[in-house]
Image: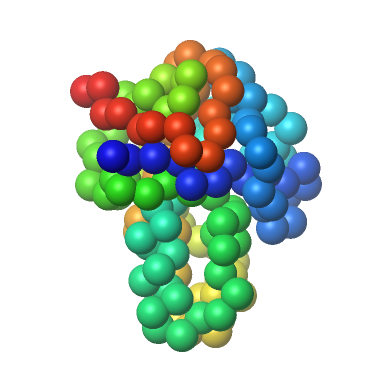
Length: 144
């Protein structure tokens, strides 16, 4: 079963996201209180714990939920293999995949340390079609 491992939030851009007990996701906006939320195509960012484990396997220490600036850390689903337009039910929300990966304009500390980072290739972005609460342990279902 695919599930939510963590919900992560940062109130300012450029600040590492920290886990919160539950997130309120607003329709056509994103995670309430998060600096990256807004009326655009990258309202919510998701990254699988499996991708984080790849970085740990090459020797990077101190990686945990939110270090890659993801709002939702997942487990049990290969996010980067989902086609754009895929709809996901995550907790009470319905979200649509709008982008796979992203270009890093400024190389992050992880990239500078090892010359690689998973977020540009394996992180995904969604738009919130139906708002609601999401918390760790919630199931993730692919709707289409």
